Amino acid sequence: MEVWTNAGIMAKLSILVSLAPMIMGIGYAIWPTESRLALMRPLSLAGIFSALTGFCIGLINVLMGLSSTKMPVMDNGAWLAGAAESIVALFVGFGCLTVAWLCVALGMRRQAT
Image: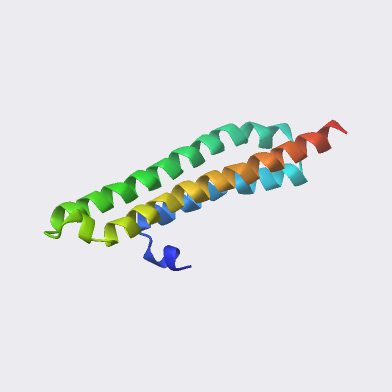
């Protein structure tokens, strides 16, 4: 939960956008329809781009912070923490996409029967 409180607005937004394909995938697993399946591709792309954007924004912030400090890079462990926090957006985004597409597979199985 500490990562969420430390995250900036763009990181939070990218994580929330990454939840959309997972929610749609769960919906498709419960109520499989062609229209829900058709929405999975664009929502998946939005989730991928959102995760990548959150990661890039995190790296930009880390590099900007490094450029404004006079401390030697190797002595400043804060940049490692910032880099690790920027990876959270990728982890959440691709984790949500994994769950989403597993739910789609389940929904396709249900629709076939």
